[in-house]
Amino acid sequence: MIINRVVLLLMFFTLIMGCNSEKINPDCLSLEKSVFKLEMKKHSNFQLIDVRTPEEYNNGTIENAVNINFYDNNFNEQLSGLDKSLPTFVYCHSGGRSYKAMEIMCELGFTKVIDLKGGYSSWN
Image 1 (cartoon, helix red, strand yellow):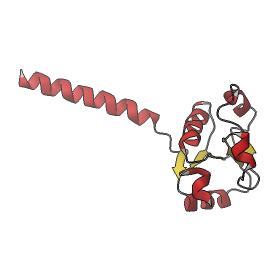
Image 2 (cartoon, helix red, strand yellow; image 1 turned 60 degrees about the vertical axis):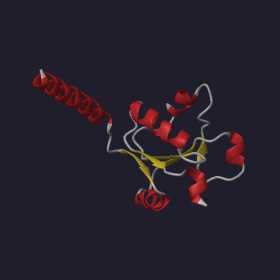
Image 3 (cartoon, helix red, strand yellow; image 1 turned 90 degrees about the horizontal axis):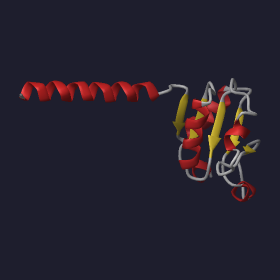
Image 4 (cartoon, rainbow, N blue to C red; image 1 turned 120 degrees about the horizontal axis):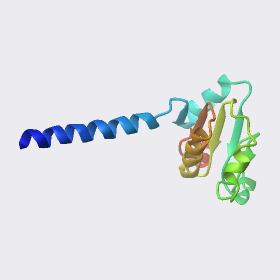
């Protein structure tokens, strides 16, 4: 009886670990500011997306960032207008929305998405 429970637990653990490992995408990363900046320097052609609200964007942004409001009803539709083959850097105020946006982008087939851990507040 104990052996059956151990076997069931091992099977359950294996199933959970297998499912979690499928979700890991090495081309979707959340990086600290210094590494984020280094990654941007590595690429001559990339997209920089600010997913904050227009009000937040108007109070300061990273140079050359395009504002696509995470809260817009057509957020995914706006993302579809971007080039999925280009490295895409994304940030918000503190990292929550941009992390979710990164996950969405990766699900939509973007080849490389890098989130700024800590968001714009860590940039300054």
